[in-house]
Length: 264
Image 1 (cartoon, rainbow, N blue to C red):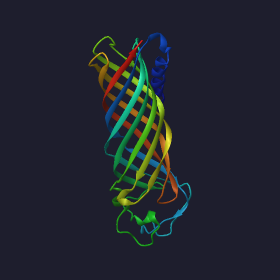
Image 2 (image 1 turned 30 degrees about the horizontal axis):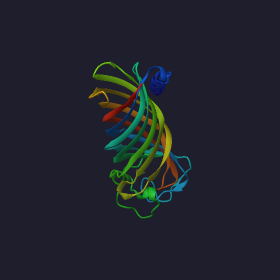
Image 3 (image 1 turned 90 degrees about the horizontal axis):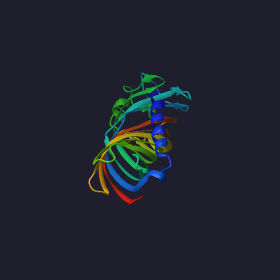
């Protein structure tokens, strides 16, 4: 319900920007920004193909048959990352503006934990259970995945709509929203063990709030917060048969600059 309401806000802001631009258009602009990004934790979940476990005795003996479609998953925490963005757009005289934005983000994995298979916790089971090895590795699943190597990165393209308040003043707060697509790549390789290495292009949306400071007639600087989310990323598991859905939700705190061009 909340997601539907937020998407409604996005559509409303875009609809306002889509009103006939020529009648009230004032100027074109181009901007760029750099961001500190907090990638939200992901509750990864999926289902397995059929496979035979390694030696996780006594909890999961060697040779235990896992049926196709068995649920599994774990939690992933991310470090703070960074983002880059560039946008070109058209500003109207009545406070509305619209832009096309190209984005890039990257965050490293901090840690994984809470591994489950068929609803049972595996963090305390020898990691051989998932590799198919007959000999135990001497390290638990929780110890292996806790190292948390890997990263998540994305390239996005968004059509954004904004409303600028106090357009006659030097300080101009604004609200914005956008719809688009993100091409997301995910690598999970805890303790150097390759588990996930893949990606997908997914529908995405974002909400923004910020403030512009007009330095000169043609030069602006601004600060902005954005919440950005794509549909879950479905990737294959390279360690044992199965697919995994990975959540992609971001909080970005940005500073940037815009240059305005010909005025109409």
